[in-house]
Image (cartoon, rainbow, N blue to C red; front, side):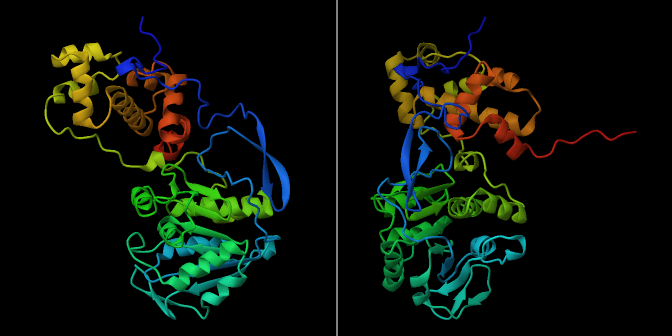
Length: 390
C-alpha cells in the first residue's frame, strides 16, 4: 500500500518539509496575542495567523490623523486610468444617501495642468501639490514606465512630508516605485505587481519586498499589487478607519468581495524551468510522467546512471533547483490544472499528483500559493454548467 505523502518525498537530498510550521491560511490556532497601536488606542491582534494580506505594522507607529476624511490622488504623466478609477470609486463617490462617510476627495497633478494617460486621452485638474498637505491619505496609482523613470524632487518631498506629519500614503501596482524613490519603502515591507517585484527589490535594496501578497500595511505606508489588489487595500483601509460595516457596504456597492482569499502566487505564470543541457532531461520527463509515484534521489540517480551525489549536483546546475523542490512544483502545477479543468474530488487529485490525501494536498498548496485548493477552484474553475432539462 502506498503511504500518504504528507512530506512529498522529503528524503530528497536530505531536504525536509519544514514540518511544524503553521499552515498559511489555516482557520484555527491563532496563537498568542500581541498589542497593536490603532487610532491612538491599543487593541489585541492575533499573532501567527498567516494570511495573504500582510497587515503587520511596526509596533511603535500610530498615525495621528483622527479619521480618513481627506483623500488626495497624486497623478503623474501616463497614469493608468483603471488604477486611478479604483481610487476614485472607493474614496471619491458620495454615498451619503446610504449613510456612508464621505471623503473630501481631490485629484492632484504632479506634472503640469494636463496629463497624458497610457490609453491615449488626457486629464486635467485644478489642484497642485499644495493640496497634498491637507490630505489624510495620499494615493499613487500605477502608470506607464513608472518602473524605470525618475520623478520630480518636489513630488518626492511632498510624499515625505505626508508621512512626517502623520498621514498615510498608498500605492497601487507600479505606484510603489514612486514611494520607493521618495525613500518611503526603506526598511519597510512592501509589495507591487508580481511582474515588477524583482525590479522593485533591485532598485530599492533597503525595501523588504513581499512578492506573493496582495497588499502590505506597513504603518503609514500601504502598498498593493495589481489592479484588483488596489481595491483590496482600499477596502482594508476603510475597514480599519470606519469599521467593517462601512467597508462591506462599499464592497457590495462595487460588487466585489470585501475580503479575498489567496495571494499573488496563484496568478503568477511559472513555466517549467528549461535545462541548460540534456544530462537530466530524460529523467525530468520521466518524473513529470510519474508524479503520482514515490521518488528518491537514489532511484533517480540510478535512472540517470549517476551516483546520488553527482545527480543532485548536476540536477541543481541544470534546473536551478533541487529534485525535491522541482518535483513539488510540478505536483502543484498539475493540481492547479486539475482544479481548473476537472470536477475530480480533492482526494482523487491528491492521488494523481502524488500528495497521497486531501490534507497533504491542502498543506502543500497553501504553502506554495497562499490559498487553499477549494478557494483556487472557486476562483479559476468558473461556474459549472448544469445539464439542460428535457
